[in-house]
Length: 166
Image 1 (cartoon, rainbow, N blue to C red):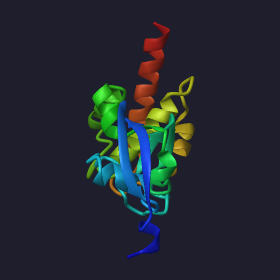
Image 2 (cartoon, rainbow, N blue to C red; image 1 turned 90 degrees about the vertical axis):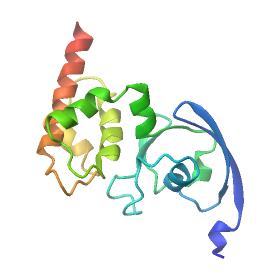
Image 3 (cartoon, rainbow, N blue to C red; image 1 turned 45 degrees about the vertical axis):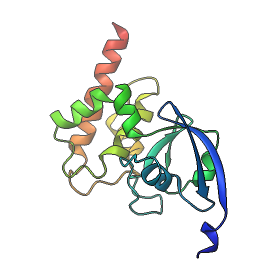
């Protein structure tokens, strides 16, 4: 058996607003814990090097790569996955815009994109198209070509700004 997985660590965290406890192998990545132990399969373990963004989740309010963070490091953390953001209604307008703009095709990268975009839109102001592209530069999509994704994000950012001004 691999040394890295021999030692187990007890963790206690909040996932999508619910308290969760677990006993995890010391070397288990957070995305694998979320997918395997909790059945939250929205975040994907893809490149496992932190470059594709498919495993993006929120940890204590910040978008992080779930494949680069160990589950043990999340002890005491507040975790939000695409499932939780969706269930809460936080990203409904983004999901609707992705559909309306045809900003998704196979959908593999979409959960990570939505979590990353949620972080961006949580900041003040309406981001420029260049800022949207820069923020999403670590989230790869092999199907859409990004233009429709940027269109969808821009649409939601403007709508949210108008709603906030009203």
